[in-house]
Length: 316
Image (cartoon, rainbow, N blue to C red; front, side, top):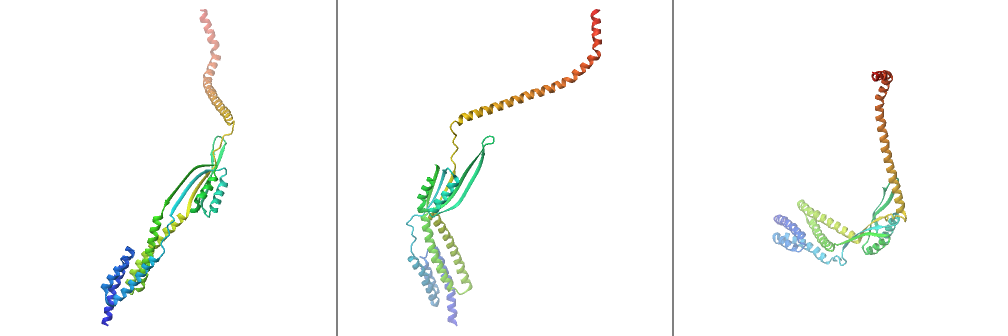
């Protein structure tokens, strides 16, 4: 009984040392793992030393297997390519279909497509309709140059072309190395979890294991994003109709139309002025009609008397 109690006591001391060693493995990529476990062996002793040795043997296995894993093949540089083309075409709708065909023929796809129709009111009843489109395609990186050449061939005129490439090889390599180390750490924690006896030991290891698995998911997600960005180039094509060209002789016709329009507007202004003068004159005469009528009535009544009075004054 006494020996059993001592064994359990030593085992309780050995397990924290083992967990501490696993944490050092996660931070130092496995090189300091053996030293940490050896410290646990020295502090545990006896039967616990045999248990810690088993953990050391299990921890060394992932390190060896990690060295035997094939290294990431990044000899081909990881490059993210993006391009934007502004093209003038004869038929916007037909050009959109041709862009779709070019992407599909290269093994790519259309990620987004938008067609716009706008109405422009020029003068009077004249309304000009214009059509534009924006198409974004994803094509395999090795077909990028050939697809760009096909798209340029669709244009009556290339208005602008921009392209950029960013290399992510270093980030991709670092992520793969980090993923391998996290995988080795996860394997060690799984072994520790299988050796755990008490609930506290299980909870401690499970918490560390969940943290490592979360990091693995994050790194894996970023690697998948970089794979998608580097395996497929992104090309945005903006399509529009060429500007309208004035027909021969239209300058003279426009000059005649403008002169006629100006003359018509001037005559309308003159009519407005004449009408205003006539209205003002009519209103003024209406105001004069009242006193004129009064004077006329007075003259009809007193006109003869005034005339006779004036005659008598002349004779005298």
